[in-house]
Image (cartoon, rainbow, N blue to C red; front, side, top):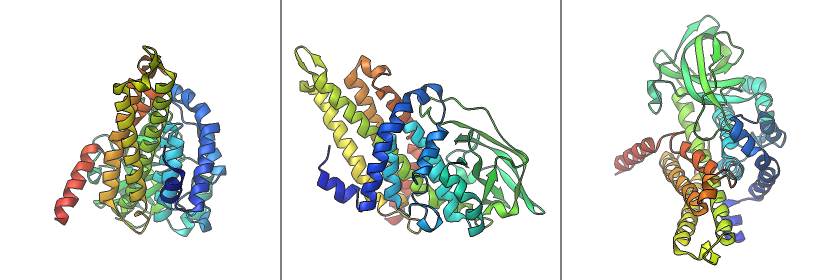
Length: 384
């Protein structure tokens, strides 16, 4: 859709990025795509495919090479999510929950002993990771979370519930946030911890190839050495990881938009009505043209912002804007694809109905549209 020269200089800034994109694109085409429809229909997460990504070194993209990762940046993470999502957004959401919400989050807050204990298992995919932040009564207002922790000798004891937890059903390891002395603190919780359990799978509209459930902490005993960072340091951990999470979700939006644009463009040429391809009708041309413009706008904004984000640099305004725009634009492109395909779009054969269902989550998860609007307005007026 865009010139190869522009693609190489802007969206693959280094040879490593270009090789990463080629590797993931081939994997998406030959291994992710064939299993996508089945897992969307069954509502199951393909853990074995996640482990396949682990064997290829694609889980620790943002982890330094010295600790077993690929040593790449936020652009590397964006590339992986974009290419995977073009084949299966639901699986990609499960990958994001593991690779960003757990692995990236854990790595940049952990100490050497914790990394030695857990990193090999999560980088390989042997253990699945998840993050527990959202609660039944507290969504966007994360600072108002009600899960509490108290000290008990050589353990912390956690009580509370977390909900809508992606990978919750399959995970072996969780980054969990709780109030300790009225300060948010981060813990690493193993599934085997006494007092920990998970609820049944929560069924949902889209992103069905990733699962979610509730985490139940009833006197959950967590060893002292599983404190992640320092007591009261949870907000720092949370905010540092939130920006790359938003970039990952925006990259899923880009993958959805790109794939839907490809499907509707091909269909518009092949489908004939009144003796000519429907691509020659102005109404269809409008859908194609506006969808292309939106897709390229997502791409430009996303890769531009990704260049500014790292574990040591923040761009909350940029990542909020990126997630706000890309999620809605991707949903609009998916909706246009359904419209161009008509009855075929509403059915499952071309998968655009799945992409439309999947896209809606991106306006909610990782920050609602309203939360992004509030954050952007606050930052703009504060700087003014």
